[in-house]
Length: 236
Length: 293
Image (tube, rainbow over all chains, first blue to last red):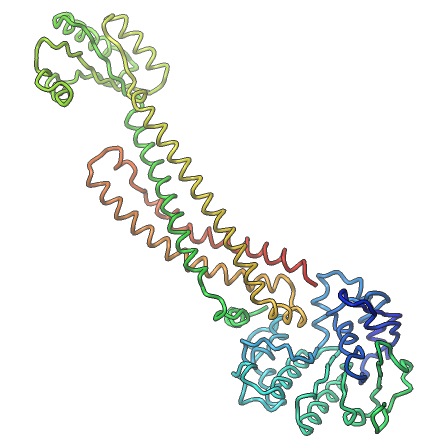
């Protein structure tokens, strides 16, 4: 399989910080792979995901995305790349004054999908995440779990080439977590590369042939993929 | 691309106070009044030019009534024989006496008061050269006669009207500049208000132009709605003032009545301002977005 994401000696330091958040990150993600990114809070998982979904540029090193140097992309090319990446943000980042329906429809509308072709897939996604009855509800009136499901529906509705999910099951019950993971797996089978950052070690064993990347103190452990088929017990 | 309805929902209307609509209504109200003043003054100046162009008054000034009458007849005959003159008529002495009564009182009818004889002259083709030729001919006929161009008498009025036209044009331009400034401020404030939403849109793959269009449409709509309200109110005020001007019976003021073309131009002002506002919003939003990642 071709590499869809490639990190070469990537480092990241935030302007207000006097230490690197990420350093010497090297790994590749194969197109169509399923990856878990684990690590303790503050280890750098979210920062690493931000580099993948182009919310952040690396301080040094090279990130190749879809075969191109993402760090050298001119601003005007970023939207095209971002539309190929679905993101489930840790804080959901839903537009608070838009209904659940309109939030899910955003990627389609931004991509220029005609309004007549928006309703059916959005209704389908709402049904998939079990929120058909709440389609008109604005996010502030939804529970945390419901908002998370809307965020996931919004991330996957455009059939992205890469799905990046930051703690996507953190606010849902185990049944819904399993169901959402099944959705990710289905997308993965259709060719989407999935990267899931999670604390939940119970999820790790549920996806056959998933790869696991572990990050500690800003450094990626075992980037060679030896931790494929993750352990049953949490890694200390 | 967003549909119009979906587009309106993306920027939260409830968070905006819609003050923009009323600001634009006031701006357009003042702009239309200024423009109407300018257009009306242009019309009045044109009417004045038409009325005075090529009109001369010949005065025959002599203390001796017999000499005055003789010279008047000679000048009149000479004028009527000139090809440059299309009409030459003596001003009725009774009318002249009546015109002078406010200044001279009963003395205007006193035979001892040496009132000049006046002859109204229309030139066939108004020009400086024709005026000079006629003046030379008149002086050659009677040394006591002198020629006055009516447009020269009213040149201070014409100058004042030109100043009014320039002032009105400057006011319209100032209002357009102020509108642009208001739009720039509103666009920047809107970007700040909707910063989180814009960040989400960017992360989902929105282009700067798509975001700019959301603001453009909103500001264009506010400007258009406010502009139409302000323009209609101004037009009503102008219509009322025009009616009062007609009642004054002044030739100069009635010449300043707006034409149908003027009304159409005034009615187009909200559209022109909406286009200016749209362009200003686009430039402001794109400029600001380029500064963020």
